[in-house]
Image (cartoon, rainbow, N blue to C red; front, side):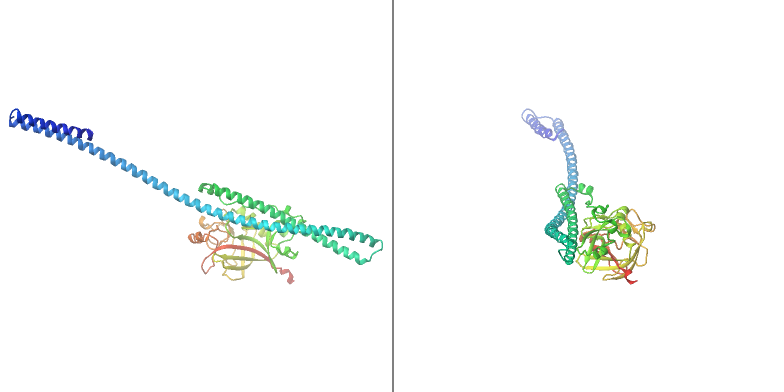
Length: 453
């Protein structure tokens, strides 16, 4: 019976009891036994009502407890869902900030390339004007040459004509070179614009799932056949950046070379007033993913104007044609710069491009063992004695043990590098602390030992 029904019956019970007492008082005096039985019936009715009321209250309490437990379970599920949503929101915000930083960098590079292209176009216009003027002079000089053949001018004028022709030819070569640079700049600008558009789309539609699926950015790949980029005869191409320097070039940038009679390919040459360096690796901001396969490290990857790895096959072809010095430049997170240099030999693919070093000089302790064969290893191509866990085998490098020095590891920001010590770009001397690096650069310099014959 429901509690409400019990409460409604109680007044009736009490009223019935009162009526009975009144009848007994005014009509007749009942016997003592009859009065006792009447009161017991009233008590039993009241007790039965109270008992039913208690059962009803007990059922109500149990039902209320069950409803409260269900509410608490729903609240716990809501708290967990809210926490997961907060974590995902934080991850999305971090990825969005990274994408915004990359977009701003690409926009800055785009502006620099536009300014450089405008300067080059201005130079080309000036050269074309000079060319038109020189062509007019050539016409006049040809007339003089005809007069010379007829005996009307001195032989000295003929020498002037030859000198002017040589000058015009040199200007034509300069114009062709500038046109090639402009074409390369246009390709780079198109690529930069595509990258900016992709990043803007990602920022507008970013989510953790999309970011995980997209992975690292796919950069312009200059590591295919670049022989079509050069209008020169392949047999006349320079062997390395030292040859480019000896040909009179002084502007650092991309050039096509052909070392050791291999297929022509592009390299980035860095020139100083008295030397020429051929870059084989550069890390600056983490824009290129270096956790690549053995095949990728063999052929090379990245952007020669930014972050890249030239390729083991190309480095080997360079090292086989002359004696080279391996120069490594390092920068830490406090913008301190250090360098180290080695003499080296490099094996072929059958030896896993094993590297052997001899330390020359530098202003930081060497972190690569000397006179020790160091096979090149990647995540899918380890040497037989080297079995490294995934967290310490990121990227490809010449390793004698797991951990330690790795200039091709996964790029970490300063904060992340401190959280995951030893997993970013690192330089670890045998005796000394491990250096966490912000940028690295590796390049080769030809020693020209053949001059000491």
